[in-house]
Length: 282
Image 1 (cartoon, rainbow, N blue to C red):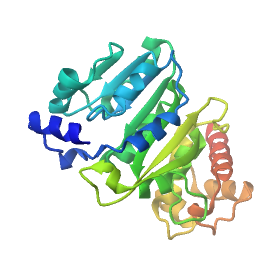
Image 2: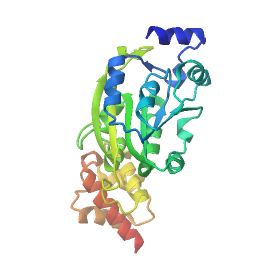
Image 3: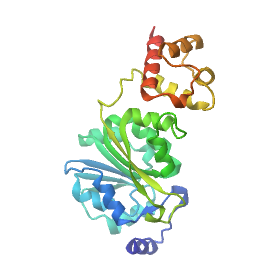
Image 4: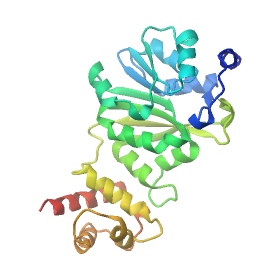
């Protein structure tokens, strides 16, 4: 940690709160994260938020290519000048929300592995982006604030279960792997973090016929959490069909319209969206 702080001082860099910069400086945790990856020499890894290069330098000897994304130009200069020595590391100055994951996977001829400590402010939009590009990824190991990680892995019927849970679990095998205490970071944040592993597989996608309808149904079901499915779908679902037909489809799937969206399983969301997709196609 001392050398990292010295580098920050020498380059007159202060962690930027607006970018959610909390650098992981615990060597033990860094090695535990790398161990989760099952890295192979022919793989390409995208690192989100290279920061001080603590993970970058550990990844480089283990893989074919590391694409280290960092939006902070001061940190990019530090990485290029002092930290990154391996020729297979490319530091990219870019907002990760604009990164072309499918294009990069195609360029390198293989699916990508993704690693990153995700700032709270972009947790949901970045996760939705990665899930959208799931066919270009093989695995992601992501650090989130613990409350976000809890939402991702939550089970039906719990307070944390919601859109993040359904979209994540319908797209990948998801597991919470490590709890990282706040003192493992510099500067120390106010909350603990957790590492979530996503293993993507085309065979894992659970037979969804129309992703647009599936996403619409899920979002509508959680739009008004305290209301029943009957009421929240009536108020928020817009698929261009009669609500009476939607309600009959809910019942035909064996789902009580008096239930709340948070009680539906992944399979029930899939069956309902597939039935609505079939109805819309007539």
